[in-house]
Length: 372
Image (cartoon, rainbow, N blue to C red; front, top):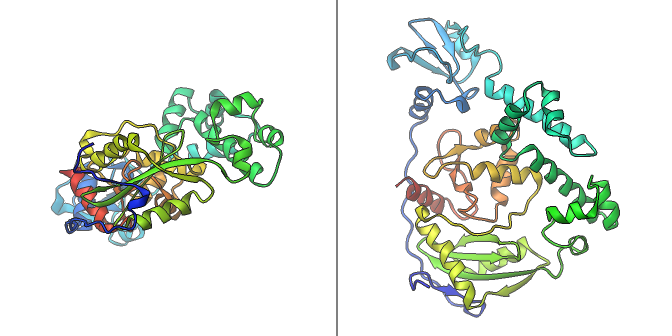
């Protein structure tokens, strides 16, 4: 293992680790500059966030309007439709800024399909869902995955798994929980590995599950990596190794934590190298645990290209839940896989950095590193 990535074992946790100072965060662009960039790119994700009026035509439009680009000196930005109307502008006939944007129409269709999947006793077929929202199966499949990060089938499987988890947590028998959740047979449930452990172990709270872990040192501070039999289940960042270990215990209160042996060094080294040099990528099996909603948010985060950011509203729209901005923020805060599930790429609507479970300075440093 590279000596630049020292690994600390459980017996080392009483020692102090020196960390290099973090660089100051880069100041965000002024909001108007950011909006102008979105307007110039005809960014559909900005629809509903602001509107613009063109003095030479007297109309106001949504940012994604396909009309010919106007000169900047002829453009006025507005925070609301009322403000655009009060300034004397009339709605553009081409982009219909008073109606739903195309992205919002798509989000509404996906939302309708999600409700159908959640209310059905058995997982609906793709053609059935497409007919219900009156679009072709192929188009529906693309839209659903683009907005939720999951295929309709994967979303349905997550819904079934959630039902099984809830029933088991309430004390139902394994057979009753599986069939009540919509699994036609126990073999289908085990084939999907919906819980990541045996149902009886899940019903007991995961007691007896074993997580291997080790703590190493990166240039951004201490890094704790923990793995289950399925893959990496946690990557936590911080200044104090003991605090990271307590965090791991809080996240997996009934699991048995076992300090990794020498063979675990290589895996920890891969994770630390990826944190320090994102271009390297990270090809490791992951054990991503969360509710169906959290899984959708985390899947959307993993589609954000390196070097780019999104705001919470954009993520909410991407998963078909435009009104769930706070819930999206909560899912980001609950993420246990730092950097791999890149919640650091989510910022406020005004372009400023929001909170980060492992420190805003680390968030700024990660974003600066990825942009470089």
